[in-house]
Image: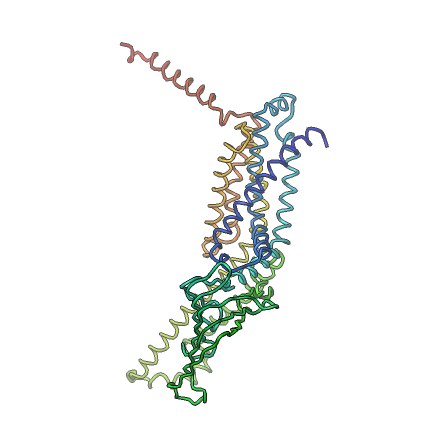
Length: 477
């Protein structure tokens, strides 16, 4: 490798790593803002939150890499132009493609790694992420007693305390016991004070009550229909054991999620899509056969001979009211069947389209890295500005165009308005001519964003207009 190539690659890797980390951090914060209400107040351990954040961050890698390539390409080539390093290279006879050759090889390698990550690592990360997120969102809030507020997080118990001291001492504890079904508030425990502590195994909470009494409106004899019996007692010290297993994080079997289209590789997506298509065609054939047989005149002669005399009156006589009612019922049943069939077909086609979308997304995001490079590198050579200022503005504009078009066409594909091809590739096909045009402009040293060039063009145009006006005899006073 030549020294010039090593210098260009070294200048490119720094901005690439920094911008990739920044973009990945912003996308991860978007995840936290979306699910912050489901994560707060549940007493989750730090390693569970870290695991969830790592899986969520991994799912953003294929989307963050094209933006990082775009931004770092603009910054690198813009910095070379701003520091007057690009001009000596061009003066020495190096063509723009000769300068960009090592970066093209590097971006091709990044595109391949992006595809391998999307195809092999991302399905596993999505599987772990969605299964863990499902368990976390279903987890009950952690045990947190607030003064004057009933806590119902433990199944079968409703607890209220009047005050809670810093050392954990509770004042005026009121407990409604609903652990037996259909009993309402028949069992009530009240104590002047109490303390809480976990059991040795951590699966139970021991609530020690002092100076209290209890009420039990159930009949001790167990006879049905008796609601007037009342048991009342007092105690100096009593210990209430509460099961905390419902507050823990219960992990769901990941095999329940592995059939989702986001958890499959490109080969699995193709096989699943073929299976869904075959099942859809078989289902359509069954529905068409059923609909064909629902119209009696369309049945074969043997079936029609068995049923036709029982439905239609004799030839030459007027139809009876029963025949009218039966015909109306058959028409309504056929209409209902058509409505259900239409909804079922739309659902099946949407499911097939989602698999096609995910299949094309893996390839499209990898190809987007190459497109964004041929937009960013020539644009940086034209604007000749490095840093995080002007390059960031251009990068955000192009990425927003790509993201908006990609998101819109994906919705159109899922709604069956477009096919996965070319629907998922429209965003790339829109930016591809822009990349070719910018590359051509940069290779020909076009003053595309040179303010002085536009000023000179305006002065020449104004001079031409003024010269024509002076040459016109009608304009001479």
